[in-house]
Length: 208
Image 1: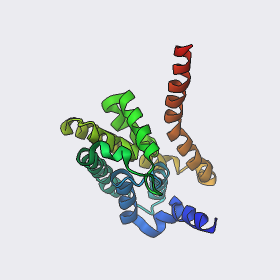
Image 2: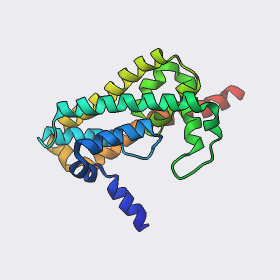
Image 3: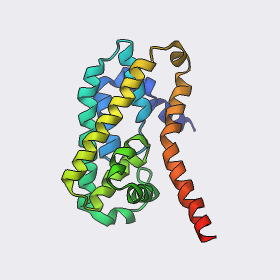
Image 4: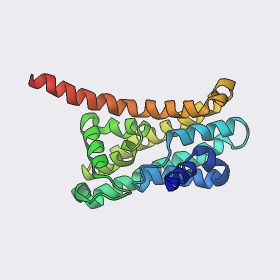
């Protein structure tokens, strides 16, 4: 329990940002999208980085210059992993850092949404880590993938950091930042929950 508590503290954006700064933020965004590390903070980290920029501790333009390319390069590497390793990834044994069910969820999401899944997945924890891999496995033409990747990576980083930059100026946001972060996480996973419910209950209704 103590180890989990320490890990939670280490992954807290308020702990990461002051200590790690620009290099740490860039590395985390890259790892979450390009190294199959699904448990790192994404949306909340970007939002709070924007808040730090809003109060002058970071530069908002520097954040975009570093994090947008990190997000794009990360997805490009994940695509390469998928295209090189192929379907074998689906049979990779479960470990602490790899869950086959996450790959399956990303595959289902990609099957439902096609190319636009590359953009939509950016705003969904865990799924965003594996969808580019699935696109590589499915041999999506790289030029097509790259266009979705650039749009999705830029939209994700810009929306989260700029949202934090402006909303963080309000006192109510500053006082309730933990609730705001929880809200961001909840909103991020809602699309996946709705898609799962639609597939599960919609399928049952069709059978009936």
